[in-house]
Image 1 (cartoon, rainbow, N blue to C red):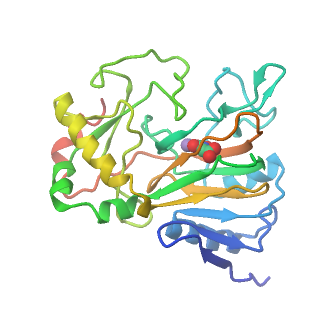
Image 2: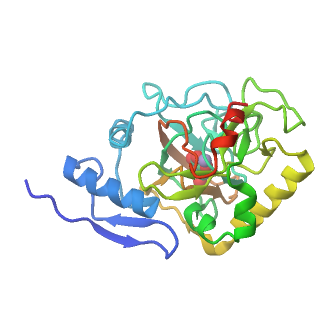
Image 3: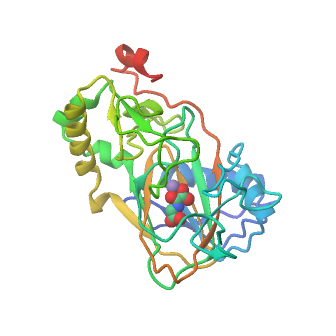
Length: 300
Ligand code: OGA
Ligand code: MN
């Protein structure tokens, strides 16, 4: 069987590509390999006009690797009967119960689940219903952030680790089973190298996770806050970002190792329903030129 070359266009000059005229419910292995290559290169992929059942969404996602079982939602229950891999992101309330996570508010820049030792390598978000306005999802190119970082700042983070806080999720909700703690040095979480090497591209990238309650290991809290402040203000620049404006049937997936994402708020009276999967990860690799001395502190 002949495999057609992919019809690919860049979505911006910083991040993201759209692959057009493709039905993700029916792709062969060669097409998958080509899609995977574009994903690694552009970090974020968009496919429009998809018609995917939950089974097809799971099957497509699973080609990228084993899937995580979705974390329990804010009600402590599963979202989709029969598909434990699917997490619903939604503000919709049915019979007084929220059918998904994250509500309708803004979600600040983050990497998914950086607070665990093996964060997912990527996430797949598929739009079932979208609000009339707002609710866009922004993506940030973390390779570019590191490449453009002043040397003076880069020198301050080489070999260092950030502890990623596990107490709240990306919408600021307290995660099930955690207690609120104000001490960034002792709150639960996982330390990862600040500069990591992407295992598939071999390129160094910046790994920040979330700003909230982050802590640069082995520093005074004030010095850690100051360094994080510098890092986040360099990172949070429009020139590193592109925003996805959703239509029903859009599927967007990101490489969680070299991107961050955020979401704009939208009118809580509008409905937004996304079905989402997450591809299992492994431990992050430190940029190995400078990190040797600090590895001992990595398992905080
Ligand atoms: C996510 C996420 C944002 C959005 O699914 O991990 O952060 O736009 N979603 O729904
Ligand atoms: Mn997220």
